[in-house]
Image (cartoon, rainbow, N blue to C red; front, side):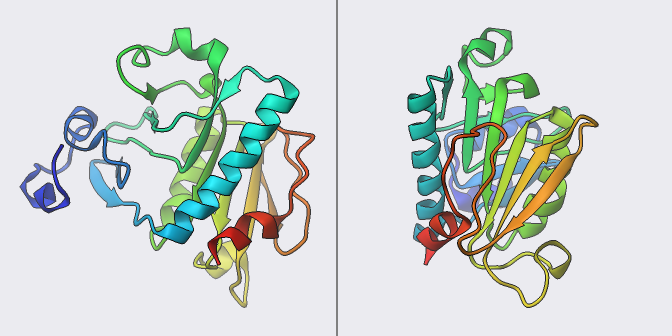
Length: 208
């Protein structure tokens, strides 16, 4: 596995196969349009992701869903040279036989396999609020959370003054995300996990 310092030695743009070969096992990086992005994970960042995963795992067990949260997973959308690495992803186990790469690598390509994704925002917030917002909708992923525990997103997305915000995006019948902007003790209404009892602060507060 290539070290971060090897980034300058990699031909640009990177193909998905090259990215997989050099960075596939490195949770720090993802690929967007051939460009390598450092996800900048910190301790608080990982705490927020862990809280989301813990609550969703509980719901999966309690409700008896045939879902699971993989430890490592890449999403390969239709775009050439792109491999998203979500902070939390929930997969439908029964859909995996249709995935062409899954048997040999933890890579999913079909939106029908993915029930839920969450991204914990870092300084590359534009990718979470814009690029992934569009691509995850195009894939048909039913639910997408953007956990901005530091309030880093642009004012267009989280308002002014900036403050910690959880954006819950649920796919509508037209294949577009409808957004809920949540803060503090506002309850989260999940389409995929309808019995979930969780507030925005329970998620965002894990990073503070």
